[in-house]
Image (tube, rainbow, N blue to C red; front, top):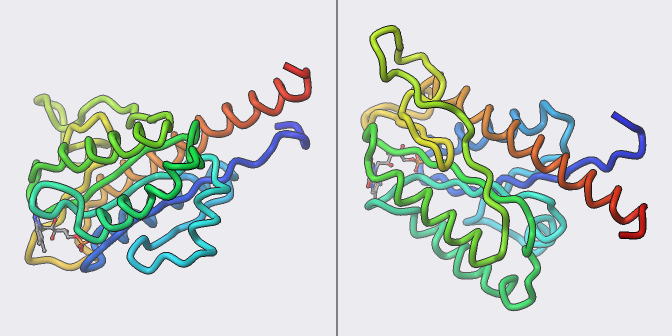
Length: 203
Ligand SMILES: Cc1cc2nc3c(=O)[nH]c(=O)nc-3n(C[C@H](O)[C@H](O)[C@H](O)COP(=O)(O)O)c2cc1C
């Protein structure tokens, strides 16, 4: 990589009521950081003005929430609604977006949470990055340890048994979340470098 290539800035904006989704958020952060990106991990239920500014300055925002009652948590919805201040000024326009969720059931209506993130991103004019993994654990040679064992494509999905703590977040789901973080950061690097090259060329 050239010394002049800008370092992409990726933020992970998430809520976790009981700590399980926080483990997934940390995996997304670690995956993005692996690529050399600058990464901010932001709890949306405690977000400060300085952290709103970090989101505004980010090249990519990855949304994360547990699935509660078939959608993102109430705290995440509060954050989404507060982001309307950014919507008015197109502040997040053309940023990269992606999402992840965790819930108690294998399916658990997680798709609806990921689609909520997609719509939120689209309202802001952001560009959605999918998970980019084939579904795992769906053939006779497959195993629970497969990447993307839950078979989602719009984002990273995790499942944790309702009677277990954050330590029980499934290892395959953690690896899948790391993959999402890496993929988003790599996409963002290409976009940031492309914009810089176009600007340098006067285009
Ligand atoms: C209010 C509430 C609603 C929930 N709704 C769902 C649901 O719709 N689908 C599901 O699979 N699990 C559901 N769960 C289980 C959580 O998604 C699960 O416990 C998750 O690991 C919590 O993540 P957190 O510790 O980050 O809050 C719900 C839990 C709560 C507290």
